[in-house]
Length: 299
Image (tube, rainbow, N blue to C red; front, side, top):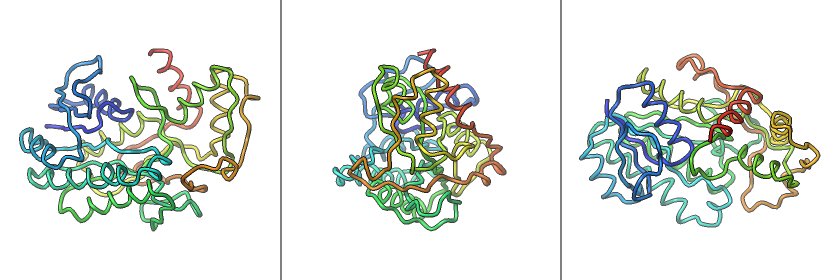
């Protein structure tokens, strides 16, 4: 099997590469925007790719002829999407459209990562059948990308996730990393009590992607952690596990932060379908943070 991974230098991309190298005999082509890879493990080929270039995507896909394209590339900065709408649309929608067109040329299956931010957060957690209603531009772009895939005439699987966290080499910050970086320095932080989800440890999402490929599944799957908690509760648990001072964490309401983009509040994703069809058994908050801590100590 030939597998092409976009966004391979990101948190999820790295986890997918490691898992597929360990668990399959696939021929893997990793791609990212950088001219060369900084990853220090082998077993895969690498080439630079900007998914917003339709001709570059087409030429690479036609050359490599993957059986599966795993798209982990995205512009995920929620406030950044609100401020840089043209860039957000170009990466999250036009980039996906380019992948769809190229996948159709070679009959590749596209596996795409989406988000609970396609919902308004009024009555979560959500099933795969819930009606989307994004309240920020990031959510709008991710919903549009789902629609591009669904009308694209290709085989596909869309995996929706939320509050993705973990450890990787040179990865941009995620919620757990941000908490660690601040609390380990003794810095005071504000964390919201009214945003609820089921935080997803990155290896769980990589496992779900692997199972979608192994079982040749199609359609939409929700992928999230076992526990539904607010961000403040997650932060307190992380502080406990690392032995940080919990008094550094001040509970606040989302409205007090004056963030640029509105956030869904009562959110999260119900994962019964993935559990039944993929054998998905996600970490809870305590186990996930403990694994996060163990990986941090390895870096």
